[in-house]
Length: 321
Image (cartoon, rainbow, N blue to C red; front, top):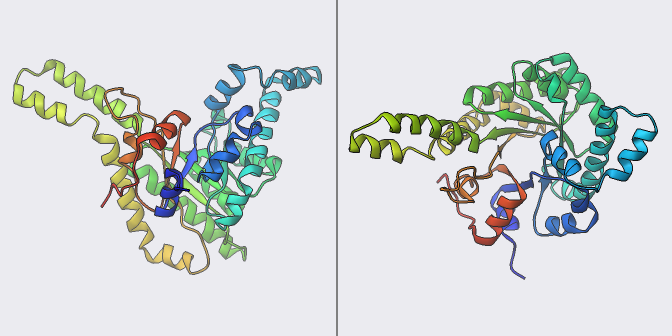
């Protein structure tokens, strides 16, 4: 039997994670089939849960039971999402074991309403990690000014972290430094660092959305044909270019004495994860942010629609060589 493209990517060195979760995916055997085909992890966020819970009746019975038990809206959301994450993590546990803790993670995000509060994010991250009670859950923390120290603190506590909402190379560097500071704190306290994992989630398509809008504004004011052509040629280029710059920063950091020393003590590297990889502009290929970001070792977390498109007409070819 021919390998699926997901497995081809995994063998190449890029892990595919699914950026989606709902009850039917967990209960019908669909997720198990995708894992068999090479899916190696899953990410979630409040918007995904909002869609899954709000646009179906799959959660209605449990919602009614929790409401009858006197649970608040947040407590109901917490119970529903934690259950989904636990079930998904159980499905991925064999991937977690087979990859020796490299993959098989399911991400759960801290409350976005506390994104500007470091202590609260740490407390919530610790609470969620304990409540889910699975080794292969990653706690998502935004890479904000308040989130950076929270990332360090959670890593120091041994909590796997998905550092999300990275848009710039400066943000990425701050996240990476926080991860490695957290590891060093563990080592200085005589604690184990082996098996603690993290990813740095770089958001992609939204960069093109923002830059293309600025280019369109300039095009509307431009009269020269040559200048118009030049501006037009720049559309759809910023996001991948930004990702390449961040990946080069990752390689530079990986080659540093500090990181090499940590690796020598069995610390895992923090991989770059490409996020927001669904194509927003219909003028672009529906697999643009998959095909143009194939490089190893990285993760690409894909919406279901984008994943289906890549499985249908994508190809596993190094994009950064």
